[in-house]
Length: 133
Picture 1 (cartoon, rainbow, N blue to C red):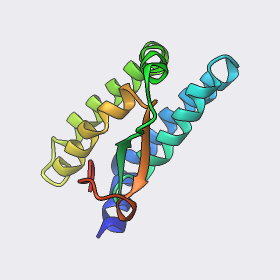
Picture 2 (picture 1 turned 45 degrees about the horizontal axis):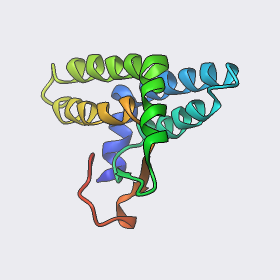
Picture 3 (picture 1 turned 180 degrees about the horizontal axis):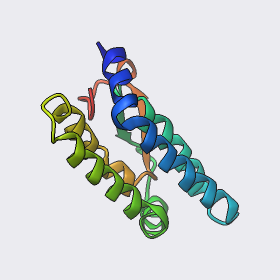
Picture 4 (picture 1 turned 180 degrees about the vertical axis):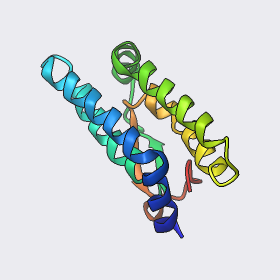
């Protein structure tokens, strides 16, 4: 079932979100100083492409550095990626079939705004409830 959901997700919105995260990652890597944020963007790009069956968990070792990094992230790329999730989610909610995918898009907004200090894991590897799927 997760595979079917992921395939539909890729067709409806996942591919475009993936491209947005990759573009942000490339831009942040070009600026050299922001390479850690570029790496985070690439990590989320894969999650945005194929989200069902995986979830986001907080890293227990994340601290003040992650918080400050997330503030920089929001300024550089996070706000634009969050807006992309909102717009895509609203567009998907127009159709009945797209409503679950729109809701999944809205659930991805927190990680698009604060990716540092988070980890994406498969559902088999955690006992936490799924963020998506």
